Image 1: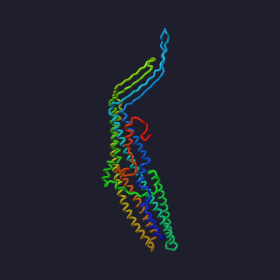
Image 2: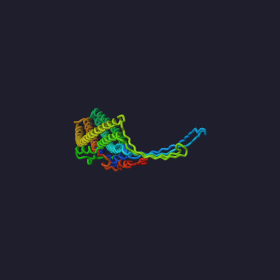
Image 3: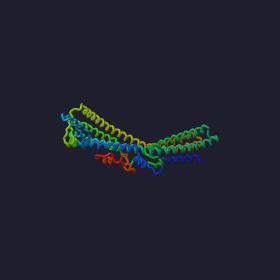
Image 4: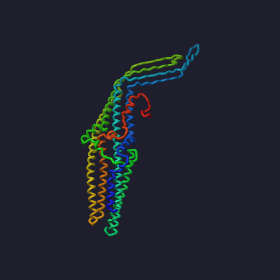
Length: 459
């Protein structure tokens, strides 16, 4: 087989590597994303944190419920009485008793109601943070998937280039032996081959790093990944639509707005401490051996209570002012979140458009580089081009192919990045074959629980 046959076969193999790598494999982008959605530890930790936040609601609701306490005591008492002239009288008895006390809040300056609403806002904020975590994990998984495909294709290109340059060196040596070229040509071919082997080693290292990252995010080793496509069909049609959607749907924006609601309710909760507290208290007490032997006592009470704060040294007023300043901060944070999300959408959209242009330019560059290489080779046969010219033309073609692979990878990743920037990157939107995690299920399970130590999953 001559050099041109080897070269064309190698380039043909490398050209289809990125497109068809793993086509016969069952592992797809959707499968990898589904696995990450179900088993990623970072995402599962966020879900656990959301469930923990749900418990703040029954904690706040406890303010509506009675507080019941029981008490018991038992002891020994002795009493000596001077009963002169009859002498001393010694009495011994064993006082003991049981009691139950119930306190029921009737009104506490609306602190309980505002605390419940604040807890609900905190839960909604936690859900948005969870949705944001889901987006980040899915974006990381799609990026890791495409990185493995890219680095696999580049490594194949590098290895194929070694074969091409090895054949080039062999033919150069043959021509040197018959006096057609000089020792310089042989040295140039050897240097280019050594450089190509170094590039292949670097590509192999990059692939190992991408494989490790894939396992970290997805939770399984990458094996024969199937090709992936951009998800343009799920994206808004224009940049203006994308920006508008992000302001209304992105979890970072919605989380910041719920934080504003929670901060506003915190002000009301603290202000409620300045109002009177109205409640009712009932108790039942049974005593035996009360003050003297064989005497029992049963007592029951039911009283209303009113506590009116007069002055707390200014501490409550300071906390109210502090809460108002925090509320102002949260409002500014919400404005910052809107601008940050908008900037991310514009940036991601621009990168997506740039990748489209890069692919078009890359394809044109490959065609031109192939034409140039063929021309240089033909000119080299008649002595109009040197071996270095041929090597440079081969390198330009290789660089064009590597750039196209990178652009193809960036094209797919950028489409996922835009969907994430808009706030719509989710298992439901991607139609992943998974059981969707619904945080509202746990919320409903614990919201009205009055008692119990076990979590809904039995822990």
